[in-house]
Image 1 (cartoon, rainbow, N blue to C red):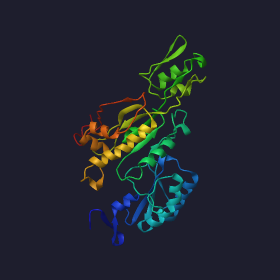
Image 2: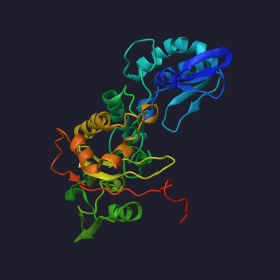
Image 3: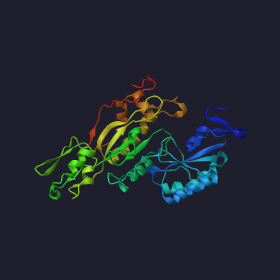
Length: 338
């Protein structure tokens, strides 16, 4: 038996690699698996959710897990029923718009994880853009792919999406637009920028001055201005943070790479990262997976930047970090709690 196969009950041989690539989880319960349903941006309609429940009742154990990446897992599915489950998943896949290689065969990959997003501007008053729409567009651009990659989006600097724990974190920004003719000098924006953000505003002769070097584009001034003297820019901007991760060796937070990036550049940078991984992934990596952050640690940041910035044209406002140093906890070097 080769390294990709394990034996379950009734002497059933299972190709674990094939199982995982079809978005089924290898279970500790013999003869069972769990179906992993992809929900880009974490938004699913009620009709699809009802179908999920039906599949869980019909083929699973009647329960479901909501994963920390906004996917859904249905445990207790017999391996013998995987083909039937894939056929019943088709309507859900159609509704979500997730890319497929062949209908009625389920999801064609699981390496690139579900694209996570906070509710963003569809729900949150602080959201600087439609996170769900961009999450779905991102998913269309990068899935299916077997490379292990995690992408997350959040609507503003509050980072409710916890994007700094991902390979690519996309944080919404706005360039606040100030109309002095609407300003009544109440200084609500100054107050809340100080309390909830970075104190980038101050009152000068009854009007407000924004320190562009301090401003993080969070939009707090817009949210709290009672007269709409502050409004969001028509252009959507993003802070792109790189190569956060969990894990047993060196968990770390993602660090800033670009501020005031545009949507097209962000999409292209993430797509370009796949070419970098294909070029430099360790051919002997366990199960053919190597985390992109560890590849960058091994190959070097300059080479990574050369690949991801290919054909990228940033807007004039963009600021790029040319050197990033990651810290984090090095379990592989020390177990010291200090």
